[in-house]
Amino acid sequence: MEKKQYKKIVLAYSGGLDTSVLIPWLKENYGAEIIAVSGNVGQGTELEGLEEKALKTGASKLYIEDLTDEFVNDYILPTMQAGATYEQYLLGTSFARPIIAKRIVEIAKKEGADAICHGCTGKGNDQVRFELAIQAFAPEIDIIAPWRFWELNSREKEIAYAQAHNIPLKISKETNYSKDKNLWHLSHEGLDLEDPANEAPLNKPGFLEMGVSPEQAPDKPTNVKIHFEKGVPTAVDDVEMNPTQVIEKLNELGGSNGCGILDIVENRLVGMKSRGVYETPGGTILYKAHEKLEEITLDKETQHYKQSLALKFADLVYNGQWYTPLRKAMSAFVTSTQETVTGDVVLKLYKGNILPVSVTSPYSLYSAGMATFDEDDCYDQSDSAGFIHLFGLPLKVRAIKAKEVEDFPGVE
Image (cartoon, rainbow, N blue to C red; front, side):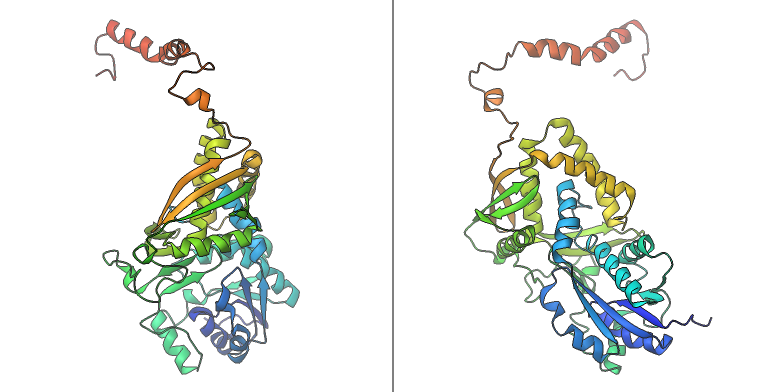
C-alpha cells in the first residue's frame, strides 16, 4: 500500500533510540519537513545536546518546552492527592505523556503540520496515552506510529539503523534498557529484566540513576520533615519551597537512602504482563507523608471513600484517560477533600525504608482523650453496649429465625 504523503510532520522527540532513528526514517519514507518537539518534564541532562542532534539528523527545528512546574502542579499533585497508585506503581510515565502530547498538538497547530508522529511501540501503554491526548485536542490531525508497521521491529535493528546512518547513541546492545526519566521517576525495562526469574541488578554500577540500592545506603537514618498546606507540599525541614523544589529535595534525600525502588510485574493496558523496575525516591516519600497527614485530618467516611476512588483514578491515569470528564470530576472531589490536609509530617529514611516519626495538624481529628486507655471524662464506655446491640440486631434477628426454621440457608 502506498504511504500517504505529508508536507510537515511534528515528531515527539526525546533523543532516545526510537525517536533518534525516526527523523531520518520519516524523511526517507515521507519526504516531509520534520519538526521535533521535546517536553522538559525534569529529565535533566538528557536534554543536553538535543538540539544539535535533532538538527544534525534532519529535523528543521527543535522545540524544547519547559513543562516542569505545570507537570508538577497540574498532573503530579492531583494524582498524589488522590492517593492513586497502579499496582504499587506511582504513575511516573503515565501522567507525563498527556502534558507532553498536549503541547505537541499546540505546536503542530502553530506550525500548520498535517501529521504527528510518536515512537511508541504497538505493545506498550504510551501509544494509547499519546493518541488519546492528541484526539482530545486535534482529532483532525493524522497520527503516524511507525512501530506498528515499519521494518525496524526490534531495538537491535534500530541500533543497526542508527549506526548505518551515523546517529550518535548513548547506549549499546549491552546497556539497551528501555528507560523513561522525568522529575518524578526513572523506569527500566528490557534485557535481563524481561525474565522475572532474574534479580534486578540494583547494585550494578550505572543501573540506578536517581539513588543507591538499600545495601549501599548509609547505616545512619535520615529524618525529614515535610509541611503541607491543603494537600500541597510547601516546605522541607522548615525551608519553604515550591512543589517542584520539594520533589527535587526529596529525590536527593530518598535516593541517597535507597528509598523508592519498585520491582513489579504489572498488567499493561494492551493485555500483557510486563516487568519493570522503577526509581521514585521523592515521590514515594511524598505519598507516604501525604497519606500519614490524611490519617489524622480526614473523617472516616471521606477517607474510606477516597481510598476506593484512588483505584479508579489510577486506572484512568495509567490508561491515558487524563482528559476525560470523569478524571476531571474525580479531581474536583479530591481537591475538596484537601481543605484540612495541612500540617507537618516527619519520616525516618533508612536503607530503603520510610518510617513514620510524627504527624501534627491544626485540623487533626485525633483525640488523645477519646483514644486513651487511661481514665477520661469525655467517653462513656457504657454507651458501647447499646451501640453493639443495635449494630448487631440484624445478626440477632437472623439467628432467632434460623432456630425456628429447619435447614435455614447459610447457617453453619
